[in-house]
Each structure stands twice: as C-alpha cells, then as structure tokens.
Image 1 (cartoon, rainbow, N blue to C red):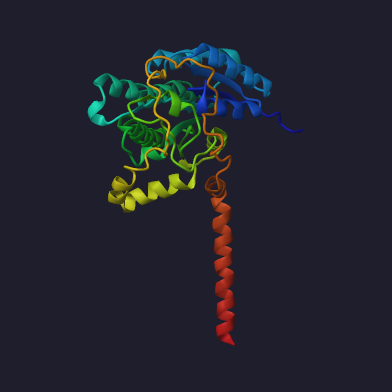
Image 2: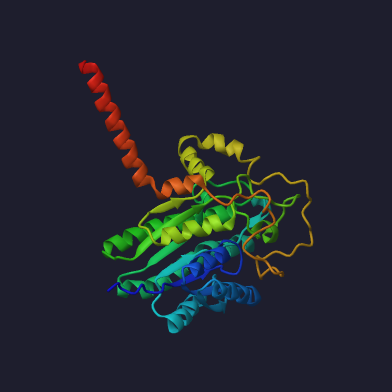
Length: 333
C-alpha cells in the first residue's frame, strides 16, 4: 500500500506581492497549507484567495516582520490551523534608492530591521518549532547583492550581506547540534516585481531592474526547489552566478562597472508623488509582477543546469573517460 503524502505546511513572509506572492502560488499548486504574513490586509486576502483557487489552503496575519511578535503570531496561527510547520521562507524586504550621504539614520535602521532582522526573527521562530521535532527547512531569500554591493542601495546590500553571514553561522550551529533541520539561501537576480515602483527613491528617474530581468515565477520555482533539496545555496540567473564569481576575482572592475549598471536605463522621470512602502504599505492592488512584463523572461537556463549539476558532472566525466580510452586506443595502433 502506498503511503499517503503529507500536506506540507509553509510560512512565507512578505507574501502579499512580488516574489513572496509568486512563491505562495507555487506552493499552492502543490497543495500546501500556507501561513501568509505581510503588512497589507487587503493584498494578503487577495493572495489567500489565489492560494485556495490553486488548490492550497491559507491563513493570513497582517503584521510587520521588523517585530519579533509578528513571526511568533504567524507561526502560532499556522500551526493551530494546519499542524507542524515544514518550511519557513524568509522573503520580506524593503530598500531605499539613495546616495549614502543623503540617507537618514532612520532609513538605515528601517531597512536593516525589515530586510535583516526580519530574517533573524523568522529563523528563530521557525527553529523554536523545528529543532524539537528535528526536521524542517528554512529558506532565506537572498540576492546577488549579498555578495556584491552596488551604488544607491547601501542599506539593502548591507542587510543582504548580513543575512548571508547570519545564515552561515546558523548552518554551523545546526551542525554543532547535529540537527536535521535544513537551511538554504537562494540568491536571486533582477526580478520583475513592484519594488521598483514602490521603494522609497531619491533617483532622478524611475527605477528599473538591470537586464536580464526575470519573472517572479522563476524566483518562486527556485525557492520551491531549494526547500526540497539539500543545497547550501542556489543561484538564479547567469548574471547572479557570474557576478558573484567575478567579484572574487576582479572587484575593482565591478566598482567602476556597476556605477552605470545598478539600474536599467529609463527615460521616465520619477514620480515625486508616488507613495513608498518604507514605513507603511504602499496603496494599490499590487500583485506578483511589476511593470516590466514585456522585458522579463520566464525561465533561467542557468538555474535549470544548476538543478541538474550532479547529472551533468557524471556525463562530463563519462565523456572525458570515453575520450581518454579512445585516445589510448589510437596511440596503441
């Protein structure tokens, strides 16, 4: 008799729009039960409705991930509704597009509290439940900017660097505890999400992600895959992989190159009246996608190859062995 597969229970932070909303859809397609947390109640309800239309179940909690209590509350609600949490996705973020000299201390603090400490608090809430059971997976949603900082996003880059350092420490501690809780970090490329519209900005022109731009479903697929595979880190997009490796070899070149490549070119002036989401949710029916559908691609060849890297290494080794045997046979004639 075949065993009945357990319905997965998942928590996703920043689930009301962008990558978080796309990730909720991806888990819903697999029938997951999901705890959704973000600040905007209306967008959370819209996400919950999408989850249920796709075959999943969901509960919502409107709260700020900068507060530890928010994570405890969504964990409690999720487990009361669906049972033990299997997967926790730390996705929520915010940023400010600005020169460092124009940033305020309050802005640095806010970005750090949401983008870095939100991950710390979420990880702690997950561990309080997963460690006693000795199972579960925590997925940190990172960025190529966790390795290579760019101009005009100093607070966000620093926060993602901090998430990377925190995750490495946590991984070591899980090994110290001989814990079976899994931990991974997904480093994302430029993604077509609403952040380029609603992030607080002092740029003169409207912000745009640099090419290549990927649809949020690409990120969601990677997060879903990472949650189910024992991989230390997952890179998404060839520019992510190249940028991380190149920064180790030639950081000075990137210092100069990224001055002109931090954002894509746009001829549209920034709307000075556009509300931002730094201190409160930006109004509007924002969804997973941002305004760059015409330019965004829906797949990443690099990620597809990365998923199958073990098979590719075996094929490469087999090919090399065949070539070597063939070369020896020719030399023996």
